[in-house]
Length: 341
Figure 1 (cartoon, rainbow, N blue to C red):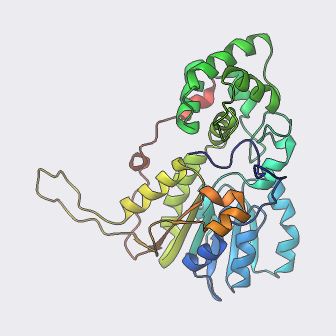
Figure 2: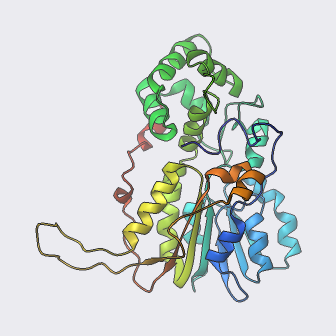
Figure 3: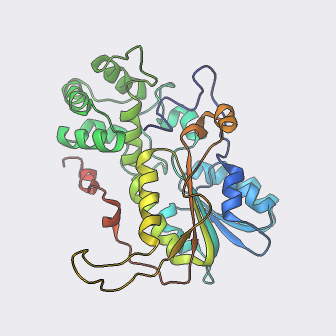
């Protein structure tokens, strides 16, 4: 399942769509913001969720790893007279910015924003030619570094797992052959090669490069690792009764959130062939339906909402569990950061 495609934020028959907060009413219903509460918005973006939460009476601590989002949010900070704190930070580090007394809620909108896609210089989209970058924080390894330096075997793993691309070997080998002649520098350069290697068929709904661009973006920004660590951090800092609300846009993200809430619901430990050693106390209870998707009306009005899924949990008074990444079943891609060096 592919969402937030590298092809951009435009509808199939129209122009670019300005970032609209997805599932806003559903997020607010699950989050229950109110006067006296402190909510952390881990993905500030254009401030859609933050503005609605503030309007409902709660104070907000908003984080964003993108320095351009922080700069653009300055006017909102001034307008809310001390009720909004805007912090340049990755949401995996949200515990560092929570008050000692804890939080009443945490909301996360996972993935790239429409504004980032629409900015050609950020390199997220191949519809607007720009540098092959994709870094949300504007620092660290870029998509060009990965494409030009990673081993073929590593490229295959990235494209296959993070992009669910069935043609990963063919694309990776084509990239290796081409980069020996000339390194990849722009989005359209890479997209053009992929389209040449795996031509678009009449039945295809997305561009042949969409899944590869998704995979590169997720890898460059360590989006799955960030999400996993953010879930653990939220568990540590939420007060009993506090809400964790997560909106995801593709199957890999949703799988992580689903597994987290399932694991934290409390279950017996030990082998099914042996007596139960002890019963684990649940650290979260499900809020509302286990999963909420956008209505047909919202999906028609906002294409980004079509693949959105919301999951939410209410924190119990049980102690937080250990931050064990093995519950997610994620392959280790950290070593790929060396890029074959």
